[in-house]
Image (cartoon, rainbow, N blue to C red):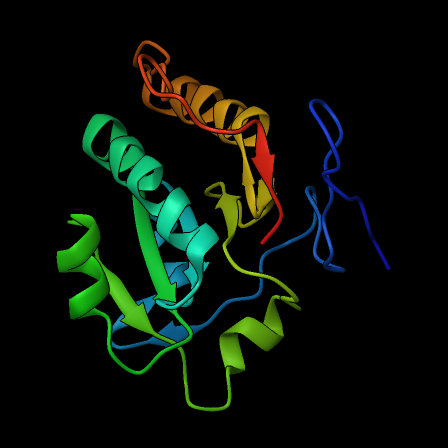
Length: 170
């Protein structure tokens, strides 16, 4: 089991057996299949529940990542642990594709989630390059930098002019 915990600045946690370097479990939901998407480039899989306050804090930053980096070599997908995604997308201004997990949380279980939000940056060879759980400025900055490298774009400063805590557990 792989467990790392975000307690303070620079200290993070991953409460999942899935870790960077491992192959991401393939899945198909609502016409999206991870293995097919990876043929076009890297994918940031983001898991959430609409009633989760930390998801509500984190998802606008995922939206910034989407608006800045998405294109031919990168995309972001939201995976809801709720049957309905539209109200969350509208309320938090999310424009990237949002799909729902199965009623039994089949995909969340494949990824061995214990907390949301959780995000996995999956590169085209199917391996997980980075993970963030809860809200962590450091982890989100690392993911943004990795995506900048993937897309060839200048690194985005996600938190410019915004006052948010360093971290909040999910």
